[in-house]
Length: 357
Image (cartoon, rainbow, N blue to C red; front, side, top):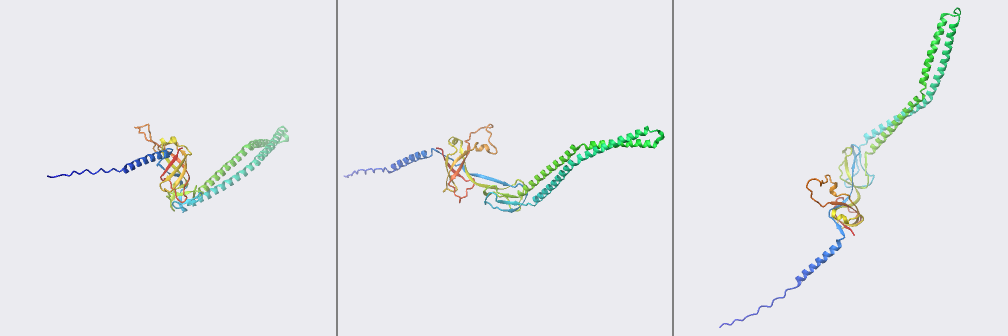
């Protein structure tokens, strides 16, 4: 006879409450973190479509010529008025000397015309007076000759000769012709005002010639000054594409000058514009320099989306239209936080956060 002993099952182990507590704590932290994030960022607008921006002035040559002196290097800091490079000035020096000679000639011709005018004002009235006096003398001679001829005709034929009569007649004719000549000379000499006006016109013409020569000389001197290219403002040399001996054409771009004035261009979505206003404070984080925390403010909002000012703006009135959220550039001025020892090139990625309230 076999006997079996029944054994009782072991008591069940109690499940630990720690995982559940951890899960609940994690959920609570998530909720609290979400609430904190909402309340801490509900009055802020941000975008990652932003970059550093500034003025990049393109420097071009106003003249054609060879570069004979280079005074700059890549990425060099220059100040307004510093000499960047020089062109061969010899052709323009010759042009200036020629213009100066033409001016001297025009001034001499003006002095001559002014002297002729002074002579004309004295000469032509005197010529008129002389012509009138000669005419009066001719009138007297003509009257006397006619009277002599008439007396010869009245004299008894026995007291004169035909030769004397013919001589008196010829003298009367000569006196009449001389009077006619003197009358014509008086008419010519009477054009006093007209002759003086001609001399005055010559002076006016020479004055204009002098003015033109002065303008030519000024242009020649200006062109000569253009052979020295200077910096129009403070900045850094960028995109230099000129070397010593390069032949430059008129208007050829030789480099760009980036000014120290840098700001942020942030392309916010059009749905964010309703809350943006000029003067709102902003903080800026720069990807290149995580240690920098810049502080600035909204300066202005561009009156047009970025796509509106592209080379080929969209034509929404043609073809199938697909609505796309537009972005509008917003200018943010940096107030403080920059490190003068750290360069801030244009086009660096930044993350601005604007406090709207």
